[in-house]
Image (cartoon, rainbow, N blue to C red):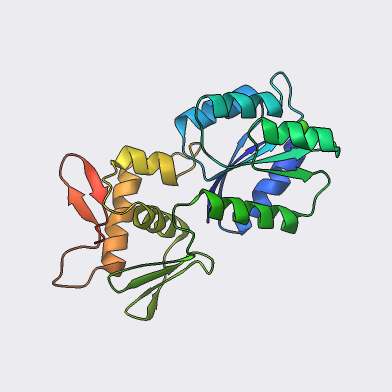
Length: 224
Ligand code: CA
């Protein structure tokens, strides 16, 4: 499960790819132009950017170059209708991590996205564990003491995010921008509500909560 930015001006294709990736439990946002993409990248953290080469005004190549110049680290998968060695090399020189030629199979896109998420992640393991909780990122499942716990997609994503950044305190605002799509009307109360439900589902009665509250600052998961 990853947070993905699609940069594509062809609305039908953007919608097709978005729907496909959402069915695979990813969080997806769409930018329709290069400028729009750079704005998204300034404001939000993404795991992968799917960047079309042919965009109005600012080309995908230029977006890539500017983003890397600004020290943006998110892996970039570049899409293009052109299939020449020169274009591929130019894309990789501009800072793209991988390259896919249109038309492509959606399953091929998924495989490339998965590979880039693994590459961009500090913890390549698809299984995350702390205390008696095991998170299987590929299977989209969570167990506590060996018993499966049902989490809603955003609860899962929030838990995964906190566990992937152990001992780091995040404000509700930071969690909102990291876990939720920026075009949804989620509020800080939504974040607090999700934290509360995660605690209810995963805390052990009589023990300290799995998610620590740092008063006046935010939340963290402590892992030794
Ligand atoms: Ca295009």
